[in-house]
Picture (cartoon, rainbow, N blue to C red):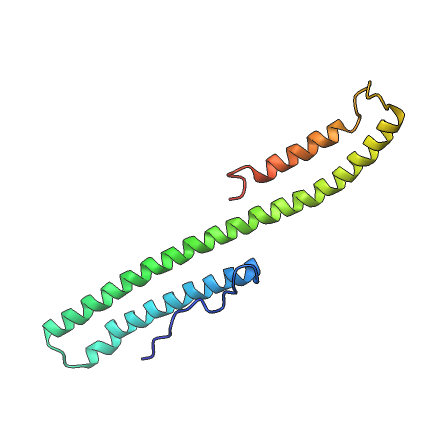
Length: 151
């Protein structure tokens, strides 16, 4: 029975990769751990009984397999947590990028209106009609970066 090596070799170096590549690597890592756990179960339940082992040896091997299974279970749990964190970060980044794109358009409107207002009111005696656009930009950024909205 062949046990596959577990590795994160598909993850690119920071700055070179895409969040999808990283998430895919963690999914592969998690799936490899699950496959190894299934192989251990197969070894314990199907393969070992084929051998004529005394009770103490069989008990020892079962304990070793159980210890390794628990270690893999913990590793899989950690990988799943990391994956959740990566995907949550991706969601936050996508929302912020979307907001930045919308705010860029709003900011162009703000500049156009403000330039016209400054030409018409060089002393600034009247309120800038574009002030509401600037308030909307600030509100968009606060909403995009508010904790808890990305779950």
